[in-house]
Image 1 (cartoon, protein in one colour):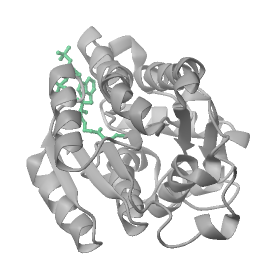
Image 2: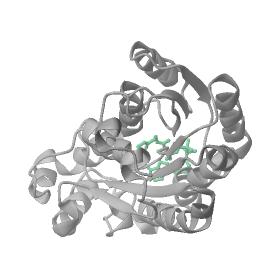
Image 3: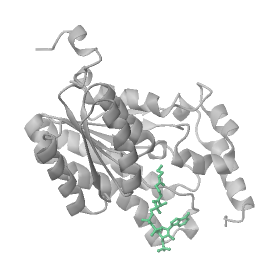
Image 4: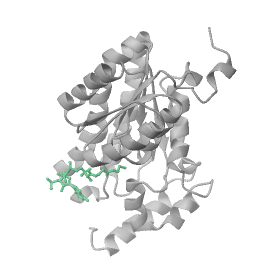
Length: 279
Ligand code: COA
């Protein structure tokens, strides 16, 4: 039976839940972990930088969450498994898993090395698979929710982002496959597709080359998102509010996918070339 709406929509929406966020030490992923903690969840975060993780954990604990941090590169399957095992031991089996760890840089496809292409595919796609795979037994036990963080590059080609587009399209395909296969275990699987988000490492790299004005013009809502606005969608999708949502790729981009990437593509290629990096 569906619980009454008023019993769901309250400040303890995620109370008693354990959430795991890869790449949770910074950026949008930290905003997601913070939103979960604000609504009562305990949180486990992993990432490559211990310093970032410890800083993030301090903020999450101030919100009342119990927190586990694990230094783990999502490319390392054993390290990811160890992080999930610790989470179950120290908190509880995960109800919520967010595969958010990502890598990015601008590079023309023709000068991208195999290792460069592989680095991004390994972090974004293989790393997401590693986290989902390592989480499966816990999610099966809790009948939990799995959320991937995709990107606009999955929907439309962006200049100098061939590697990221391939990786993010793979992430969305993986999302649909797992939603299909794991639905029978009561596991919901979805992805979010953020547009430009203010204050993130990824946007700083892109805006260096294009200026922020161009991006704002490309977004019908006329501005970047805040990381918190992306996190709000993540909350809805992993919560009981979305109890019948699975296999959905949900765009949260202020309408940017409607405008196409043509102007961005011209500007970023010109700026990249002018900076001495381009072909
Ligand atoms: N242009 C072209 N190639 C690049 C590059 C760039 N700006 N940055 C890295 N590469 C290539 C390297 O040259 C290397 O290939 P090579 O061996 O043929 O020279 C390959 O990518 C791996 O580089 P390395 O520095 O060893 O990778 P890493 O695993 O340490 O770093 C990255 C991963 C490359 C994704 C790095 O950009 C990163 O970690 N970024 C931080 C996270 C981030 O970007 N967050 C924002 C998410 S939107």
